[in-house]
Image 1 (cartoon, rainbow, N blue to C red):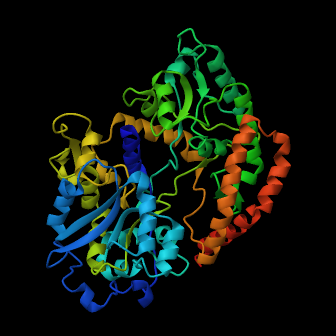
Image 2 (image 1 turned 120 degrees about the vertical axis):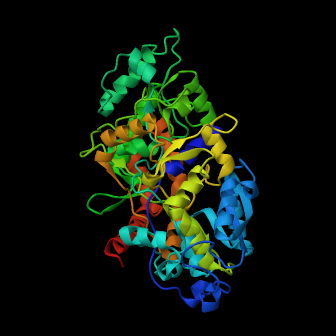
Length: 536
């Protein structure tokens, strides 16, 4: 579990991009306590610190990785000294946060703000139009968020992508314009490559099949047993996105091609190609037959036992064990029979879900906006992601923002220790991934990852779909359709792959998808895409 949390916290540092919105706050959007009257902003500074003339307390609801008491975290203590704002945490474990969030909205027992909120577009639209979440663009444009305003001005697509159909922005994203991975990628076991004398990675599905056959037959782990697993997965959820690109699809559900035409992946011809290939691997025992029953930890145990040739994880050593190294190469996406392949669904540069919001119970929205804006600048990003200066790092050249690591207090793992000093651990939080923040701290492994991405993924990468919003009516219709479609597609994928249903039934499967509303899904998202694309 610790390694999973490490992965998500590193992902947080690598992840997303830039977003926010426009328009003017309406009276109904402001809510009963959050109206932007002149008196509401009294004692709140637009520049300098502390933010407020008199100390205030704000209730914050958040996910929590469970590493330390937020009230004792050095980062939050430092932030309180700087801003004059004390936080009263209302925390929930990561696994149960979604349930607690739903109960919170249903009961009306609201905090002042939501942090690491994972607010889906539908939630932003629903609770924003109901006045439960405050429109944020007013405070941004009135000078309470200079860092965020600068980002939005420099990246207008971010504002556009987090503006709901009613013209408001109800949540903030995490922003990382340099991000590449939308989901964790695929890796080869370097020891197997060496044992099989593979000097050039597979470039086509046929070559990939031939490699996996060799793994099965030639004992690359050298133990004299045929216990190697050429390809493993957990319910195909981990590899699906990556493999879809081999057949020209950018996303598991909805994507727009280079001409702006929207597609629903499970009814595409490329999806049939994917199923056919996976069924071939299954029949020849090249795809792990525990794929649909094993847990992530069970998959990792096979990696630690040096039995896996090709697998998904955030970094290869999370599965194989050992230390970070360039010994286990990133999988090169392979070409299939579909013209124009391979492709890669690249990270959109911002979180798809909102990471921060202010509720209508908040009596100090201007002060709250200034508080969160600090995280979108260099100093705040440094504080929340690396902790206070002198704990885990120090400046080597402060003028040029060059840092160096310090020994971990008491020894042990730096990432584990970081989780005890900052809330930004294991959860996707508001802020920006600024390359300046990591100057001097990046490792050779980081540089190797950048090189692998630049060579193998960036040239074929495209964001699958922009961050768009459906109207309330459209969202209700789409949610109802997806509820049935998702279940059916998931069941049929497993049946096609394992051979319970033959691929000769493809046409009847597609007919059933259309009967269940697949074409209507395409219509809804084509309309939303066209609105986004034209700025209307």
